[in-house]
Image (cartoon, rainbow, N blue to C red; front, side):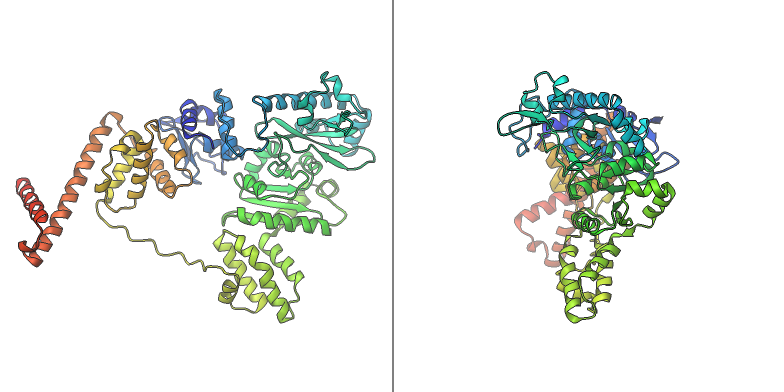
Length: 578
């Protein structure tokens, strides 16, 4: 994986205020900066960015993190891709991680392939302007020049080696690696895309990574995509995601279709929050990527058998990515329609109504299972539970799973507990939170505040003195991280090391409290020492009380030699204080 030292260097170079301000205009608010949150709709600013601690926090929706987290959430990227994006901005080269696909990739090859794809896209754009046939096709589909420009559409003319006009070295390896040309068994090359409307597939950074080609007249296949390359993995990419980003934030809903012409037609008619899979079933990666940006996904499929099968595959692959605050729903259009033809015939208002009234995941799941089973027989009811079991086991959402179990119990005639037992589910009954001991909670909370302000102090924490309070695990984790890495000198650096750790939430909450509190860096060490002195005093008082109780119960003779010595010393200190 990417070395932690590189992450620390990257965070030290990237200024989160400049980064966020490039996406969301920030205004000075005391020592921090504020804006309306880009991750949820609000009218008054609750999104705060700390220039000194290099993190952001929204007091409305709870979004919190570093520059890396912001890029992940705002652009819908995974961790590695977000690091690469920031590294490019900072002019840094990300160390290659092990286990990558395409291990034979040469240094600098990715950048070369990106440049090749951009040149090919420009060639296709130029050809569209010169092709009456392609222009007429676009007009027939109701596409305007504006929408064609928005999606970078072009045209690959008929012919075998047209790309040689823009790539004189037609035999270059990179053209084949990029998927632009095909080489037959005899070694002869020819263009992959011929006489097709060309639609670039763009990654979240705005780079062209593949193409989709739609036949204009007759021919097979109707749609042809680039093969998988070092730039393009169809199971990870969604067509139209960069263009849909603003509409996704505004609607908090993503509409997933099966083809890029559906996405373009919906955008042409005012529905900008649609994306499409690229010749593959919806994957868990697709769903995870979208649920980073919206709380609701609506899958829009044809109403025929193929559409229902595609919807079921989408449901199966989505379950593991769900959370109780996220929703999935399904639209099934009339059999003679796809999203493209439907919105052109019925208009945006009717399509919006379909999105609002989309069938919830739970209804679709239960309907499909019920259609596979004869619920008038005992065997059919048993089959219903059998079919439901693997789906319920995939669900990480206790609330939705509980609702489904209740409805399955009603449909099958089994008791709810029997359904849970037969499906090997653990009943979701959250245990009562453990009672926190009252020993000096304010002291450990104050220590956590000081350490988050000045992380270097974490290595000096006397872990044996830390009482058993809610803050203790967080303080121990910070002590471990800072002691192991002297270079970790900022909250942002620590925050990335805490990603996925049990103490992450506690430390996030403590850090968010700091945003509104003044703090004098010059007095941090003195306050830290004072707090440790109070902890030491508290520890001594507890030790004295324990020895005193034992002495009263068993007499001084009941104490060991070491305990007698400690008792005498503590008595002396008690006397001096008084």
